[in-house]
Amino acid sequence: MHDAETHAGGPAGAEREAEVVESGGVAKLHLTLAAGDYDHMRDLISGAVTADGIVLTPFVLPIEEIFFRFIKNREWDVSELSMGKFVGFASHEKSPFIGIPVFPSRVFRHSAFYVRSDAKISKPKDLEGKTVGIPEWAQTAGIYARGFLSESCGVDLAKIHWVQAGINEAGRGEKIELNLPKGVHYENRKDKSVSGMLLAGEIDAAISARVPDAFSKGGGKVVRLFPDYRSEEAQYYEKTGIYPIMHVMAIRRAVFERYPWVAMNLFKAFDEAKHRSQERMSDLTASRVPVPWAATIADELGKNFGADAFPYGLEANRKTLDAFCRFAHDQGVTTRRMTPDELFPPEVRASVKV
Image (cartoon, rainbow, N blue to C red; front, side):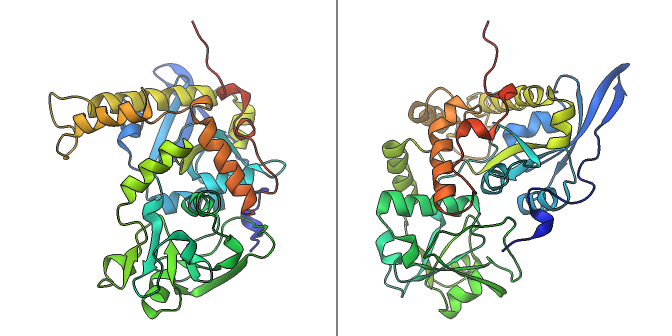
């Protein structure tokens, strides 16, 4: 479960320097950026919002490709990164990644539980004694899901047989070193997929952020453990205050150590792009997204989640970050129990007040 090339030390050549270029007669730092296709990043990607002192070259790519290439090769300077992988690296003495408290993806994960319809699993506790497929132990969605099972449902994770494999394709493996808790039964199957094993009856259930083909194309052989997952997730949030953070933005350490000011300047630009997106979503004048009553729904969610339903920054997310640090350490993803303050440098933990 240890891949020397993806350990905290990183691959050779990862410490290349960022370039300084001239833009409009002014010297600026040129940085490359990789992120998914989000409306709340649209204005930064397009250049409508800029970061002071920085010229960005953006790459909009599939999430799995972004994570793989950034962890493996550090191919860009600033990147969206799995929260699970990020905290795993952060728990080492000198992580190659410096975090910015910008969270592009937040998703409740009751929808991530899939079970065979004949497996006699109707509630979380029924997973004990069963075999459960996962794409990676350190996948963020799985960390939150197992934290929910353990802390909210009293499920003993050591009483489940965990099988790691690609969701729809064989060959996927872990990307960070694990230190699994004593008693946890974990098996790697690079020769099979989770979907294939579900349909063949080799496993009883799966936890996955991505919908398995076995669910969407399995003819009813695989169903969700929580069919009304939105209601369950709303109750979970009301009870715990946890709004799961899936992804975080990270900077290559070599860039941050030479130019520490980039962290806050990027944070401000990401935040401005997000606020512009929220204004579009709440605009009743025209339908900005192809969903009926989108502006009304956005307003209703604001009443449940506060003035900013999708907050960036440390303090607004401390409860969720603290829970995730606890989940990750209890599950052997981190080498030690991290705190939210340790995840981000002092430069982005607070902003100036006028």
